[in-house]
Amino acid sequence: MTELKEALETRRNFYAFLYRMYVEEPAREFVDTLVNGRFYFPRLTLDEELSAGFRILKEFMEKRKGKIIDELHEDLVDEYTRLFIGPHRLPVQPYESWWVDGKLMGESLLKVKRDCRKAGVVKSRDYAEPEDHIAFELKFMHHLCEEELSASLEKERFVECLNLQRDFLNDHLLRWVPDFCDELYECELSDFYKGVVKLTKGFLLLEDAVIVELLETAQK
Image (cartoon, rainbow, N blue to C red; front, side, top):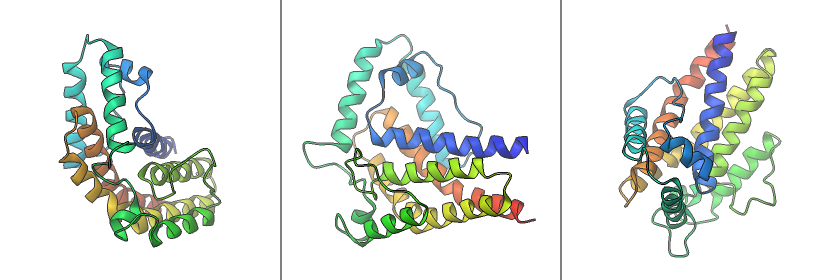
């Protein structure tokens, strides 16, 4: 059970890391962690994309050891603003509807809302972006991982959480995020965001197999 709990916690924590990379600019404390080599790299089965992401981030950290934290933080805040806020047109749209429906606020957004309600999740009024924003979809998976952890000793609820994760992953995230990551990677990016993009794609591609394996184990 300890090994299972560690695996579930690793998944939950990685979703937490990823959604924070898209929901807001990196915090100064996080930049300090990177510059001073204190960033924790989780133990994950590595595919090509994940390996590339970790390597790029490690190289980013190595090159910036001893740099002035405030200057790097300002650079990353500016980059986040350019990529995900504006004021100019975003280089790559971070919304499922744009990728699946070809327009913003499309049918895909309604499907995300429906699936969130099915899991008992309603978007906070404080969160300005629609539910099909990449940050919200990753946050939703993080929420399901939290639910899964608390239900790990209740087989029926545990399996229900895994099925919700598998369905949301296949019905939403895997339909568009890999392509989003590929296109964003080709933009003018710092190595920090290149690493984040690779980690995002690699982790989600790996998740499909991980959830299936967890379901098979739980149902034995």
